[in-house]
Image 1: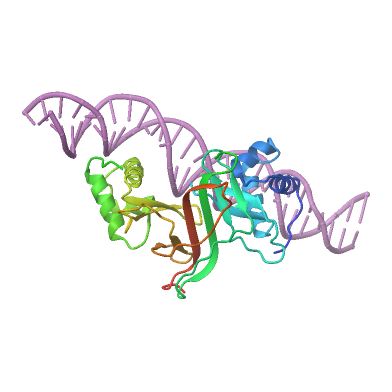
Image 2 (image 1 turned 180 degrees about the horizontal axis):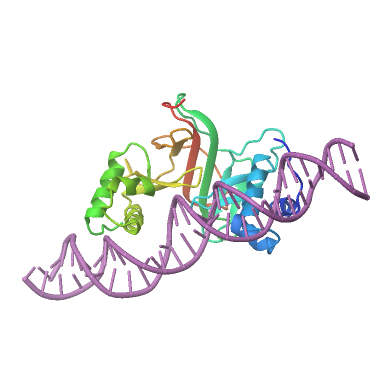
Length: 125
Length: 125
DNA sequence: AATGTAATTGCAACAATGTTGCACTAAAGA
DNA sequence: TCTTTAGTGCAACATTGTTGCAATTACATT
């Protein structure tokens, strides 16, 4: 969990993600940055931020990838909360605190989970 | 839930998926078919089979898409069961019968869920 | 403040995955 | 058998993500 260098791209991308209340896709970030840096750099910064535990990667129900800030995982870095994906406005929201209960046969070794629920968000319902 | 025409491609692809005990990707299916039909046709057949409720689409934790047969959803077509994704052998397995318990605020309208757990499967652990 | 070095970036090129339009083919009901 | 139209192949394109390499830049150290 080491901290890399603080570059303009990294700072701006992190700011965007932290200020957003929904998860952002690479494409959305690229639009917001208005050519501040290369497409490839955004991919690399997102990877780095994820590795550093500053943001987390969400695979949406449609296969699209989004990124959201890591609120409240300063201590334990866990993202077993539910992500809600709105079919209408396409927003993806972290449902902090809502963690589904489940159990698998002991033979399975769990290291990561991804729970996505899709439907209509309060705004669109 | 109408039934489209029964073509060679459709029959073969459905057979492949039904005979497999793990979920298959487009690429894997294409390999197995050995040029029986076009790449594009496979995409279209998979879409159709999914619409007809014969197979279900799984978005893996890494964003990859796989398809698995619909065992036991003849009556109610539901796929809220957990999918286990092995990080070593890359297999994706439907954990039929294991459904996580969760609850969201009433304002959210749920229409679909995708629960993926990744780690090591019994064979790789 | 100047400097060294390793992390970071831009560019170009590539790979994988998925979509669309259109002419042609073939499944299945009449 | 004929007719209709769902399904297919091909070509072309779009999106998303990756890699190699030379140029740049953050930042620890002088």
